[in-house]
Image (cartoon, rainbow, N blue to C red; front, side):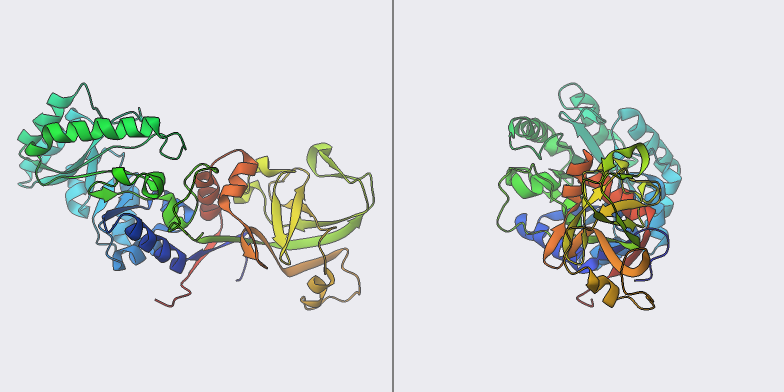
Amino acid sequence: MNIKRGPAVEISLAAIRHNYELVQGLTHGKKVVATVKADAYGHGAIDVALMLEKLGVYCLGVAYAPEAIELRKGGIRAPILVYFDNITAEDIIKYNLTPIVYGAGAADILSAEALRQGRQIDIHVDIDTGMGRVGFLYDRESEAIRALSRLKGVRVAGFMSHFSEADLKDRTFAELQLERFLRLKSEIEGLFTEAIWHMANSAAVMSFPESHLDAVRPGLILYGADALEPDYKRPKAAAFRPAMTVKARLLHIRRVPPGRSISYGRTFVTARESLVGVVAAGYADGYPRALSNKAHVLVNGQFAPIIGRICMDVAMVDLTDCANLNGIRENCEGLATPGIEGLATPCVEVLLIGRQGGKEITASEVAAWAGTISYEILISLGRANERVHVDEDGL
């Protein structure tokens, strides 16, 4: 891979295909609304969507209208749900989009605009069962929901709700949310006989089969990241494969005596003679500063710790305990001196996320070190850097 600035990101389409097929198996062939918002969680929405479309995905999901329009301009023909945006009827009709409606006023406006254009627009309706974000309140707006059946310009094609904590081992609140959703379903489904009902996110796909209903909405697991609490028992069939590998270069290696501080703030001081490498990745490239003195990378198939504060453009790594470092020199062309200290080593890969030499660093691990979630890590690294898609299966 020709790495330009900072890290390079490699996306395995074969892994995403494998994960999609696992979702189908875990849900016994339920319809799949594949979430590709935020540029497919940093994995490249158009490339991912094109592949999912070939696999027969029921629908794609994005957050905002510009994301949906970008997919249409990229050649995507599959149905697209727009989760949050208030879209005009003109754009809905022009780009064949399906908005999520979470208030009666928006539905009335869409219906009126559609009728003026002599059309009918498909919508999905969001029900707030406990997420507390958007949606018709399950227990207070049932009449407003029923009234949607009387609008002539829209057709309710689906109902959705969203779990707030389906990833937790304690599933008490998730079960309560599902109970609320199903109670409403039993009360109104006779008015909306063509609508599908969907609620299961990635965590629920893995752990909560009762919530699979007519369709499921996986996001994170399509990209191979874990969606459950660390101590949650995973289904044996849920062997999802990480699709993202993040590579950087070793720019420089030098030997540093004991007692020397490394990087800003002198948060790390060498306790021994150390071999310190400079990695071409910093927080400008989506590698969080919060990983300072906490993360590990892979060099020559061996774990090496990040030391000192991560800078805007580079990070330092302790190579002292890495065996066979002479192999670095042997694999590089154009090195004129016999030692490795002080040499630029542009051919040496450093893995920030991925598998090397039988060892692996996952987005979930990086997220735990940084005190965040894997979604943020994947999106930050995927969108900030050069990205290439590969398909090992050649499909």
